[in-house]
Amino acid sequence: MDEAAARFLGHWHVDRHIMDFDSGWAGRFEGRAVFSPVPGGLAYEERGTLRLGGLRSEAFRRYLWRFPAPDEVAVHFEDGRFFHRFDPRRPEAAASHYCDPDLYEVTYFFPDPRHWRTEWRVEGPRKDYRLVTHYLRIG
Image (tube, rainbow, N blue to C red; front, side, top):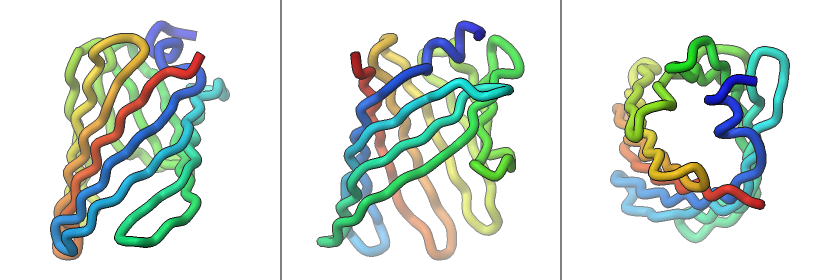
């Protein structure tokens, strides 16, 4: 396993704050994420509770992270489609994904090995929201 993959491997506490600018709703997701080794990379799975606009539900998400080079993480959707890529060696790394007609922009922040965060900005004709997610290593 390469150094970039080893950095993420394991269990993380997830705390995500959501702001929908169209509706004015604020929300929060709290749960856990696990990066597990699979052929070709790491499987990412998060599970937890989503609270948004007075509603509460259980939520989950899955991705596949591949590590084609020491300076590259390629994030794929669960079904294998490419999502975005970033450089995990940088203290701050940006990426984007255009899913017609919506633009997804993310910045990764890596202040230390036990904590990292993402800040997503999503804009489109029917989307206008921001997600800030903090990851804290468990154990």
